[in-house]
Image (cartoon, rainbow, N blue to C red):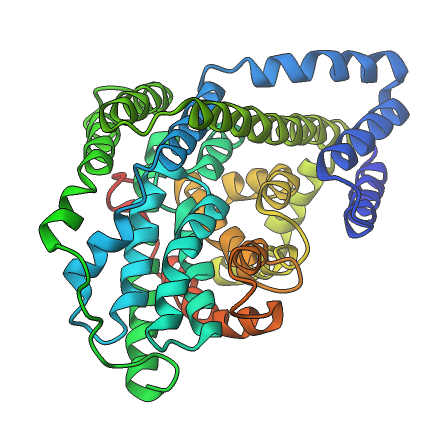
Length: 431
């Protein structure tokens, strides 16, 4: 063991990431170099050859491409297009009803997507033009969708939660169930922000009621396929009828069948769904393989054990430890994408949390929430740039970042509640 080598490895990794080296390449390079230095070239090559298969061949990992396929099929076949219109039917009489409808539509899309970016892109194309036409300030309209998109990774099925459950060796289903509370709490906090702005600053969000342009019955009937799909996946998953992995397979098959029934499954939709599933899965898996190698490197160097003993010796309280972790994730979120930030930090944090007796189910939900905050914070803020691409005629990047500020504050309140009252997350999983 050589703890100094472990520290050097972490420092070099940080420099590579700051220098915009791809996360997967940085993880693999540092791990391979560090293991070579510690135990030799042949063992390092052995880990490089064995880790990809041993990690990716996990039965649970098959849930990732299945849930991705379900989301892409639902999106490209048009199963999700009626969510915004249906939400408007129910919420049109509330001040700020269009923005609130967009948040609820994001929540519905999240239940079949698991992707923050896909959620923001889909709802942005549909809702922003209508909100701006109704008198909403473009920055606030774009900001509400950018923030609403983050719900995509909180409400199951969440790809981030699946990867976390595998890395942390904890129940993916329990993390899913725990995420429901924070997903709902986040949606409620965003709705509260919209109502508050509508009340205090009606020039930003008009108080007038949006006129109904389409048949209410028709708008509600248009979402029956997505409701069936959600009921199928959630019902089977939370009743224990099938596992998270099986839920992905059932969900993807259900999405295909419903797309055929509704006539939305064109050849182009099939091609796009399969291509995006393969590309997204590949990018996630190579990062995950790098993280698995990095975990091995930290273990061999003895850094994980050293950090455990240091934290135990420092006698940090729960609040102090959580403050440090929250600040680290908020900072990482400003320049790293969520998967990279999670997989770089978990090998360091998980042993500490286990030794402190902190629930890994609860921590998984908290981590995903913190990582999603990074999706709307500058300078990286991927959701903001997605909205900029789909609504470039309405607002600049700087204006959209200004628009997300009230929602960022709401996110911090949700994080505080989750840290102060872990039972909110653990009540549904029974933890």
